[in-house]
Length: 83
Image 1 (cartoon, rainbow, N blue to C red):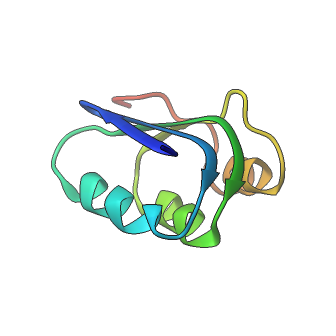
Image 2: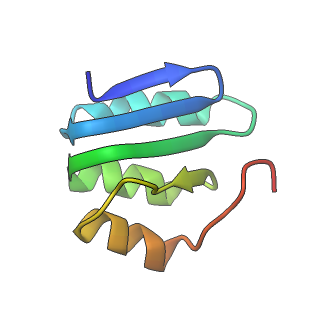
Image 3: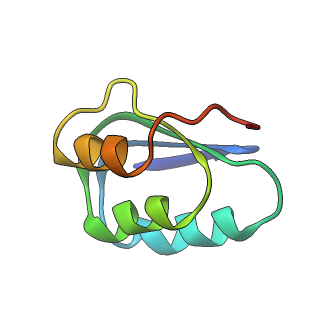
């Protein structure tokens, strides 16, 4: 499973197809500080990438490389949870 949600943290790993974007969007719309960890993501569909960019959340890119990580690093500089 590419997305695992535990409280206020979502961990995405492996290949994250477009259908993950809706579940991620629904979860991010809930109140409270949210944090997304991209733990060794090998493929991030652009719909998921756009979802991550649309919300003011902390994104942990540790263990992530490639175009998606580069795009998120440029578009969303490091942000600490609850800041």
